[in-house]
Amino acid sequence: MNIKSFFATREQLLYLLAAAVPIAFTAWNALLNNFVVEVAGFDGEKIGLLQSIREIPGLLAFSIVFILMIFRQQSAAYFSLLLLGLGTLITAFFPSTVGLYITTLIMSIGFHYLETLHSSLSLQWIDKAQAPTFLGKISAVRSFMALFILATLYVMMKVFNVGYITVYVLSGGLTMLLAIVAWVGFEHFKDDVVQETKLFLRKKYWLFYLLTFLAGARRQIVVVFAGFLLVEQFHFSVENMLLLLSANTIINMICAPYAGKLIERFGENLSLKLEYICIVLIFILYGLVQSQAMAVTLYILDNLFYTIAIALKTYFQKIADPKDISVTSGVASAINHIAAVFLPFTFGIIWINSHSAVFFIGAAIAFIAFLLTFFISKKEPA
Image 1: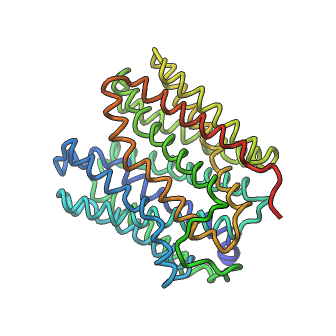
Image 2 (image 1 turned 45 degrees about the vertical axis):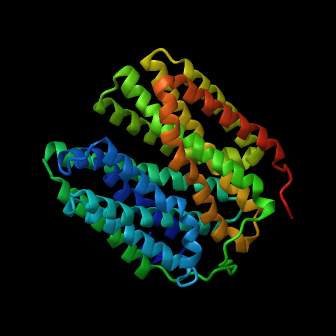
């Protein structure tokens, strides 16, 4: 493939944007806890507030509609990638409480807006019949890049003793460079359908909204409490957690394309039923877990079934009016992040009394989602 042909298609642009995100975000996220403790002297209260600040742009992702009043989607995606890189690049230069809150906000605005725009453009540009397989490949690309970045960070910091400033500058700078390369290299593809630029909630999308909210709640339980269970109850070491995260990344890289093919073959209805009923069983077993090996197995299985979650996006693609995709993608991101704001604190209180109760509630949430899939029409709208 020559350079000119690489910059020829919309699909190549989507692949490039997907690959660029983990360069900055994986580096930022992997180093965060060590950096804020070792350099900025953070305690639990400060890191908790920083994580809440990180989620605010996700909750406010619906505001992308106001950006689209000024920029077209493709330009807004480039600008978002620049912000993600910039927020990462300058992180190490502001190792104070306020400084880290501000750089985190810049990074997170870029990350969440780009995620929303990438999802919107994918659903608009990719044919419905090929969308599940394509989104599976996109997930695999992200996983491969995240794994590569984790391995590179390990070598840089453990073997060559590279410091935080160098890592943040390189990862953020490379992300910004890729944003500029994409901006200059790709033509501005014409929008097939002019998108709505007003906020709305449509009655016909009620099921998508509700499943999106429940998916956000389910994911927060895993992200916040499944890993914490391994550390608190089974004394999982940092090295073992890194190995587990790497294993999950490899599994996702391999399985995501097959998840896409599964959705194409059996449809969103059956695929989501399979995901949710398996998650019900996994959460019940989490609540009953007695060994480290079982907890690790459940952690990996949950990650495996999460690859099917792209079925929710392709379900929306099939029921949506093409002009609604951008705004609804932003609204969906906001709905998904509602759980990220209130659930960790609320369930943290429950956790103090019973960690099993947290996972049993998670099983109930997944079962409600399973029941809701019976409202998904098996027949694609005309």
